[in-house]
Image (cartoon, rainbow, N blue to C red; front, top):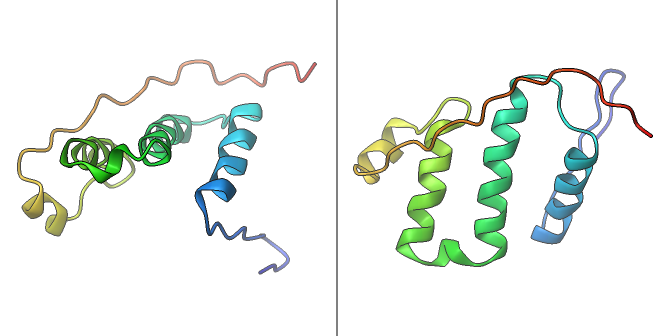
Length: 100
């Protein structure tokens, strides 16, 4: 889907998601969103390695989600009472790196 102001990229598999991970590793975000991306990438690797199929892996993902964006919804907080947010990565270097 495309309009004059934006383009959407639809991801339908873990293989497609790996392409996005590779892109943002090559061209890092220059804002505090980088912290959310780093957390998202941790969750991606948990899923890619099929760790999410265990209770421990699912709890890791919930801990990551608790630290991202708006955190856990009230419904998820109720379902995962013992989940503690993981520490958010600090984002200090906000300069554009030399592409060469």
